[in-house]
Length: 166
Image 1: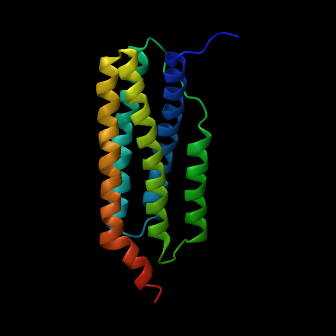
Image 2: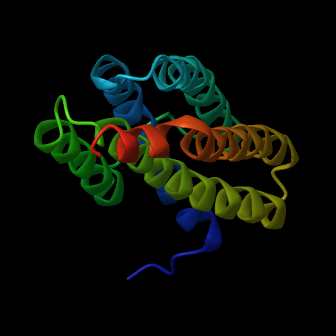
């Protein structure tokens, strides 16, 4: 059995997040349609636009390492998105729907933040300076999205879920 290196792990993880981003891109419009709060709908739409750019950056990273962009099924994102689907079904029309959607979106963001932070660090270790820049740009976007979702949850979505039920 061949020895697996950090370079191999970097490539496998890159394929994993490439798959995840493409799945997220498909899920965001559905989440936007399901959301009741206009700001949450807008946040999902904005993140869809950002995700398109993030996929392009990932394609550039594949190019930097001399590999063809290829996805590998990501069980983690499948599970997170499945939970989001369950929330949309179980809470459809309910006051807590938006709070659940927002929580599902943050689970996605936290997964992405973890992956991009790891990939950036590995790219640095492997000497892929241009990849570091691309991965860091995406990491910063994901962190900003997470912060914006937290602010929206605290400002409007969570209290709306609570007060409508009273």
